[in-house]
Amino acid sequence: MLRSMMERATNGIMLWSLILIPFGMAAMAFGAGPISFVEFRQGVAWYLNYQFSGNFIFLPLLALTLVLGAATLVVAGRAKLTYRSALSRGAVPQREVAVVDEQRLVTRARAALEPELNRSAPRVDRILDLLFSLPLELGASDLYLCPQEMLVELQLTIGLDRVSVSTLPHALHEQLIDRMRQILGVDEEALKTDGDVDFRWSQSHQHFRVELSPSSAGIQLRIQKEGADGLALADLGMQAATLIAFKAMLGCKNGLVLVGGNPGNGVTTTLYAAIHQIHKDRKLNQGIASLETVVRQELPYVHQTELGGGNAAAIFEGIAAQNHEAILVRHIDGKALAELAVGVAGERAMVVGATPGHNAAELLVSAWELVGTELLVQSQPSALAQRLIIRLCPDCCTPASVLPNQQIAGWDFSGEFHAATGCDTCQFTGRVGKVGLHQWIGFSEGLANTLRETRNAGELRERLQSLIPSFAELALEKAKAGETTLEQVIELIHEEQSNG
Ligand SMILES: [Zn+2]
Image (tube, rainbow, N blue to C red; front, side, top):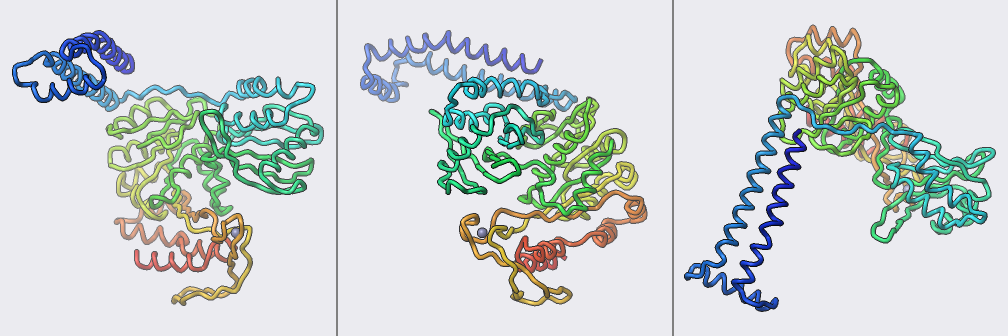
């Protein structure tokens, strides 16, 4: 309904503009006489000079422009108001929920590939073109050529699903790999290599990451679309125990999973990965909904709602009324929204969301302050806090005896650490990307009791913090495993000490 009103308003404005423009042009031509471009410019200058000296021939045009501008403002403003008030009454903007349809995907991929594959002499360059354009056309993040015993499987990754879409013979696969090595400019015999390819079409271009890696039946090829985030939880670098506990909690029918951390620490990515996990694990009948300030990434199987400037609690109520089995709430803030979201988590749906706080204890304290003990305990809350730190280049780091640049009371920096010497992969910086540190507080009877027994936020914070390792302690483990530097650990210790 809302949409049809907006459409009618837009159409009306366009129609009237089309009708009125000729009149405006005629008025202009009439005022300026037979014109060339120069004369028109002179006409405009003349108009500016003499507008108010008795010649009113341009006034209708001016009035027309003003009326049109005002009409646009009024209609756009009204549409926005209606939209907001509909949202706050609980309407949810419609969005098509397109679940990945494997059969359709396979059909489309085959239609693109098979004419070329079935030629008596397949053209290698033409097929490579298709391999680069397929992920874009079909909305996939990765394309794989996986050699099997008899044939080579072509697979696409969409969201977290990896779908096998076609096959090709080994002989052709080997030609493709050879050609790819030439494109990457590597040795013809290279088994494992990777590189970036900038692929150009007539009007656009796209970066890809290409990887060749050996497998038992031949060389596997992976073409990854750049900008395609790894959304698998397993790729986030959680400790095994944390990952298992986090996944188990996401698998529950209902409950509250808080995810948080300081801005810039990949919290949004983890939230999306959690939603992917729920989608992958359960065959949901009622689907997944989300309430986000800004939709950062379109998830085809999530009914995503962008908050805009709307009333979050009212919009959440509208979403909750639709009985989704899982709801992502990007920011659980404000008492009204928090009470609704935590209430739904306690009754019937899995709610994944972020509360303010830089560590896992803070996330729970924030929620506790917003909704109080009873509601929070009923929702069976757990919390995951995330922090990203520098990551040593895995290709060139070696065990080294690193001496800390300072000693800190209570910390033992003995043992072996790692240092990176620099290589092509890390462009001689010794660092590649970031590695995540994760604090996890899972729901248990013990946690429920702690929540019930504490009377104030300070006490709760202290008791919860005693349950989890600090980020500095987690970083020290990563440093000993060769994933980050000792300097980074020391930096975190100082940061945590100054935060109290
Ligand atoms: Zn390196």
